[in-house]
Length: 280
Length: 280
Image (tube, rainbow over all chains, first blue to last red; front, top):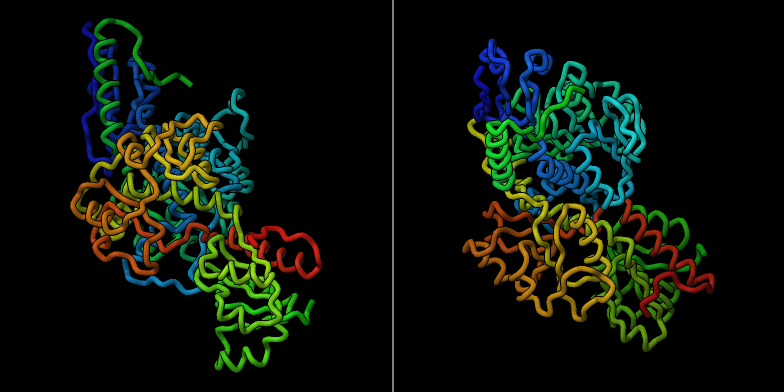
């Protein structure tokens, strides 16, 4: 039986492929390997099916985790310190500032709750700790090697955080994991940063809470129906929006190509592949 | 202390104003219709002046206030205060150092991320509806870039600590090499610039503007300018520039800490205790 790799084609980041082409086209071929390229997530791969058929799946997201972490920190600083809003203000010729120009909020000392402490979550934690933030997390399972406090559910985490950062995978279990209950627990001053997938949040609820001033702010790189973004957000200064670009740097693309080429060479030499998705 | 006259020179912070009002006999100079007459009427009872970076006790004001004992500035910068005159007359001067170190360092990193990852531009891209027509272009990675710091004082060190969490090698220029740090020292700014990819801060504004306009420089994040609040208009049209209106210390928490220092210094003086942060 010939062994062959399947490298899923580049597609527009903003339109994730909803079907699972890989498993269907591979029916009958058991020795194969899938590397989802773009988007670098596993939402469109049927993992249990692949496992059943002995198809190896590797995850390219480890290549991007630094860039996504940088983006998450950038969005958080932008929301708290009103960087994009202030830039608009200056470009609009509205300086000098009167005494009551809205102040931002200090990042140091904020309690940050990370939902999903994988590669990306760990990189985010490392960066924010240097700013004097305290870190806690929620994950499928507690990680014994990690010193940060663990919360068994996202609502508990939110109740004990000032900022919630979402960087976990989108699965049936994590769909709308941040719902109205969680956002209420985060309180009026709470900030949400989402660099995972739009559907991790109940977007309609979040927009309403933001518009009503029941949520402190949001930095969003992903949305439920990209590239459609709820227009109510455009009028808000405490919201920063980006077009699903957290992974888009030439440096990361270069590392991705290296990973693909290395894994291709390794695959055909019958050696173990890098970045294999485990059976957890 | 309610009978002690304190003259506040301009609106600067509501919390500070309220706290001064509660403790002293507060005069608000900007609400006075006839300044010379007002000063004549009340000069004997005014024993303290509260100013900031843009309004300070100059020689003229000091001469009209024979009872002046202390000038407490709601800022770190005291260029508007005639320090020599104060020394001459035995008038104490205090400012608000240190409490804003972290906020300024946070903002520096926020600006780096905003420029390199083009956050403000992305936010504009989404808000204008352009995302529906096409993906945003690539941005540049921050993690791992070499960062050169001009001036390794408290703020410089705080910036370095944060940049290190992003895996950035740090270099610096200072008047003297610092034997206690492991960062790479360069004896001149030019050499520093030649050996790093991100540099802060600038000195020659016209030169900076022409370098940016002519594309000789990759980008700039600016919170301060030579003639605030005037910002060179050629910068408004550039996408690789982020412009902020001098908000380095502009957070609710830090302004409160600065206000507490002003009040603390005034109280210490009138209770004959050692001043908290004296300059003169």
